[in-house]
View 1 (cartoon, one colour):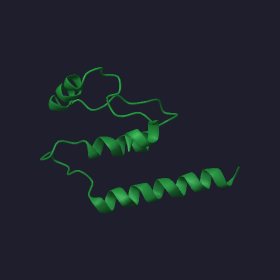
View 2: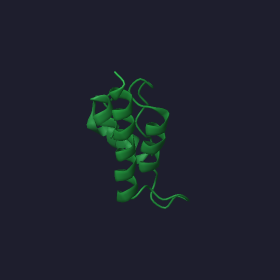
View 3: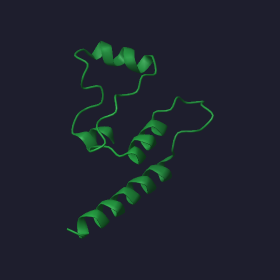
View 4: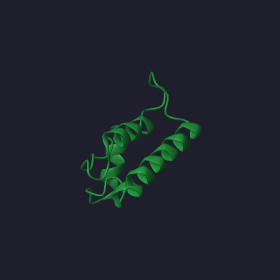
Amino acid sequence: MLQVMTGRVPYHYYVRDSQVLSAISKGNIPQRPGRALVTDRQWTFMQQCWMTVGMSEPRPGDDEIVEFVRQELVELEKATSGL
């Protein structure tokens, strides 16, 4: 989702794959892009998807992800239909 929204792969600011692997193994999520690219709602959802397995709240399931994307598309259509 982050790559689709920004047009850049997550962790694009790291030069070497080993840096990416190190960040992931430490539990570091990708840096947040500007709000013009990713809304607060989208960022919060992405963070939920990146939660460590076994945390108090489970990651969103397939149905939740599909519903989130559906809602985003509806909002996008509303925003663009007024143009």
